[in-house]
Amino acid sequence: MPSRRRSTTSARQAPSKTTRLSRVLAGAEERARATPLDAFRLARRKWLASERIDMGALADELGVGRATLFRWVGSRELLLGEIIWSVQQPFIERARAEVKGHGPAYVAEVCERVMRATLSFPPLRRFIERDPEYALRVLTSKSSTVQSHNIEATRAGLEEQVAAGHLRPTLPLDTLAFVIVRLAEAFVYADVISGREPAVDQAAAAIRVLLGGT
Image (cartoon, rainbow, N blue to C red; front, side, top):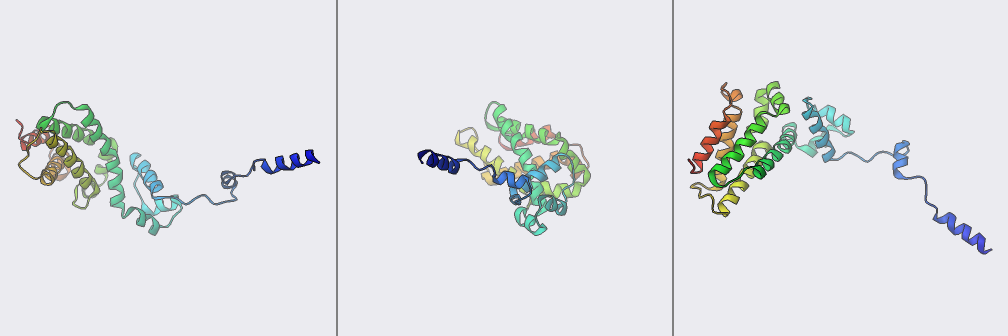
């Protein structure tokens, strides 16, 4: 009798071989629904591969309705803006870590490095070449998430320099950050805006003077 009880207890404690993963793999249970982050990751992979982002096709691939996808991301333009910012943000972080010094020269060099990295990034260049007007709307319009993120990042960098006593701006930081970003856009995307060659060095020089440098 004791041995029988031990056998029953062991049987009860034996782990089940059926898991949720095994049921999903076997098709016995539906996979969990996609999330907004899944949508972002899939769209980002497509954009980096220079594929056109079609919202209907993206929704189908994710297994959700178009209305759900739009509720998640807002619009195609806003989704593209977040994708492009996810590329630009590391450029800014790397430039801030690598550039030495402080004050106007430091800020100008950080901006210059970010502008050069942005200008030379192949997926972004192909995105602009495919439809310049649409690309500019995504990159530089007042409703653009790319522009707003860039202004926020620029302001944060200026604020650090001011707090450390390396900058004494004559303009409010919000205004100064906006002007720097707009100036950078004008020079980086000069070929699209005015048919002129991009001139990153001139943009950096203008930013340095704007901040009171030489």
